Length: 283
Image (tube, rainbow, N blue to C red; front, side):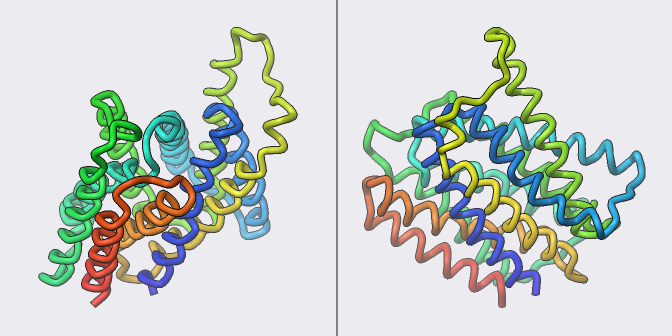
């Protein structure tokens, strides 16, 4: 079942990334971050009746995750202003490799030959998508690369925290507390930036940016399926992490159809190979 849940997560988060790219056309990255994390947190309030009592240990863990993800998402929003949506997937390559290795080391997970082959296909093809773009516009600079490496490290740390916390807590608790802290730190980042203006108010035009609301809703639904995947008995961080990279399919298609990116044929071929890799992992 973790494969089905992960695929559902992938679909929602794939569109969530597309909505991010659309949202920053009308609003700055700090406003987008604080608004969509607030929307996602408000959605998580439906879990309150299921009980949210946790120990101080887990409160601190979720606080750390909230800080790291708020930082990572802010980095991605900044990069999306200048870089093609499909090319930002370099983060997925790095986090896949890290999660694959750490899943074996930390959680003693095992994997088959077919799963290794499928994982390598996905990793190589996603890396290839970042190479095929020969146009100057939308390419990744050294600064972008450094920021994406940092973001990849944060994503890997978040995957480990998700695996650990879902072992001990319900998926409802995990989602509520994580969204609470990512929302809190998003507001802190926003307040720091707006401090010099002596105003925390959000412009009316930003409230009219419907893409921001879609980001928050799709983040909430997508992460719900992710935590369900981790709760499946015997689920592996390796499998979930690699399969989640199928969101690149949505990113590539959106890049071609919506954002008119170049090198369509090469990107489509690589995307098909990624799907083949995912099938091998599910065997």
